[in-house]
Image (cartoon, rainbow, N blue to C red; front, side):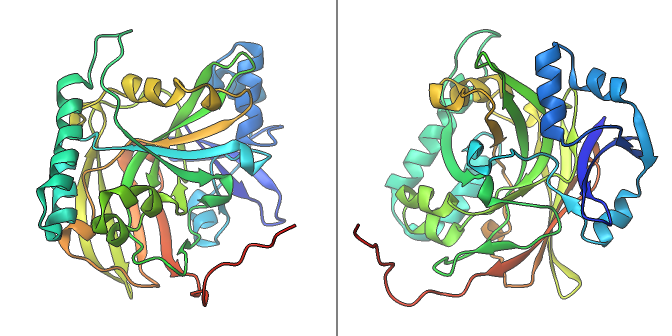
Length: 330
């Protein structure tokens, strides 16, 4: 089952469910967030709640995408209670991509730290069920104000050195009233980052990650395939200038999802009732690692068969701000 949100022609929000090629609105659904909340409150699965609501008017998702009516597949009513986070060096090809990014540094210290983290995942990222394994690299991207709908531009700040795609899988989680993280489902995501800034010094990783991100357009509800195969592209002036397959799913990772979920939700601050989490699980594929320099107007396209429609966003840069930001004393 795939679930998404679109804006109707009159601007109102509709929740859409798709099985195969048939898509339809969920009757009486105000948002995906509310459906997930209903599932938690009633002790039912999200699929059971949707089936109880029933399906209404058919929806042409491709037309909605062409008309720019795709919304994020889930958001929080208060965007400050929606968290965008992620983990890195989690995939079996991650270390080679990271090393390629840092190759021009010429020093071994940064590479050694990256490889050490990668080895920790290889050696301890797949613990026995119920056990705790090695913790991964972790980063924070922002709250719901940094989440960009499919089809809308990903805007790099004016001070950014770069704006590059990172094709990833994201887990979507809603925290229950008792603090239990409840997984809504899975989506493809573009964990948009500044790779030039990161390359200067790996201690600037946090600066490079504080950017917008996009995910969807659809959420896969249910089990995630162990072997996920997709494609990532950069399109300029209607032509593909870079394309590469990306692999994800536990068959292609040095960590289990359970281990990565544990190391995110072990912190009390991330188990606040009602909060929504979009947690991105890393990648091994970057156009930047292959020498591509993205430009304003480029389109990022990320797709994988189990996740429905491709995720597309154009690249934009905010105007540079002159001088330093001033703080007003009260």
